[in-house]
Length: 219
Ligand SMILES: [Zn+2]
Image (cartoon, rainbow, N blue to C red):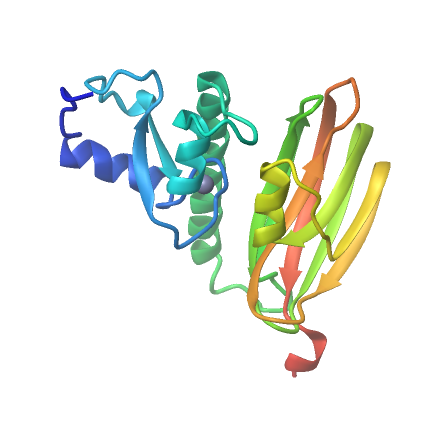
């Protein structure tokens, strides 16, 4: 398409910030990202039409390589909506915390946490990326109104999953409505909580996950 118009800088910046400069599909930090025109019209620079994607996911949206799953326009819009919602919620949490900074420090705060409900469609998946340091512990509690599979894996195995290949997991449980698991990070790195729904019914799922400092680091 030769008629591509440059996205105005102010719009590009606003969209990138709203997405914390991360791909709205995989949410993986520190990847190079591009701005994708969801409707395929390169002159429609309305922010609602602009999705932040890494190159891997972008090629799964537009690619013709005939491998793996392709993302539909509707899926990209849904990923964008969910990720921008999560980004805006975590910003609100951060500002709430700074207002309460003078409070007693009795309560331990997790390094990172997420608590929300998501509909995982039949055949679909949910994932959340956690940056963890060696010794930190990821504690996960899931409840769903249908049977789902729960895994914690590393990034390369998450990509294998996206490509429809077999993948290894550190921890996991299959066909569960309730799942509690924890994982202690053996190395610094990116850990992915992955929930998949292989059943015929959509599953309303509540995800409660937090990364905690290792006990021995506390004094
Ligand atoms: Zn991506």
